[in-house]
Amino acid sequence: MIESHSNVITINNIKAKSFQVLLKYIYMEDYKIESDIAEDLFKLCDEYSIWQMKKDCEEFLIKNLKLENVVNNLVFADKYDVLELRKGCMDLFAQNFKQVLRTQNFRELDTETLIETLDLNNKINNKQ
Image 1: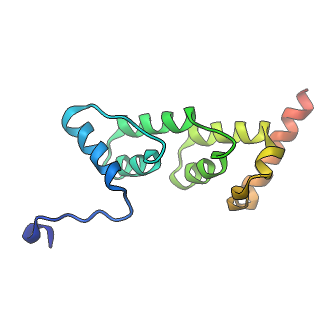
Image 2: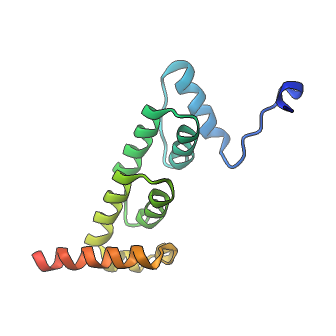
């Protein structure tokens, strides 16, 4: 392993700030999740099996769901199989279907997810 000879460990595709927060948690159990690192931190926790912090990241993402980020969070939830986040995204999306369709990033969704959301939106509208 290169790391044993160079004193350098390379972790790709993760922000340095995310890794610093992870280390702070490991050594001091004190950390703050912020919007700009929540997804990175979740991925790190998933990769290194740090379950409590991973759950905290999921809860943070759910609490911070907005129309502007619901599509990105839904794509993330599907990619990493984050069920509660997905449910929160689907609920917000379905309740605000027309507004979300006006956002730029709704095109990132696959057809199956769009149909699922439309069905959920129809169910909500039929109850009213």
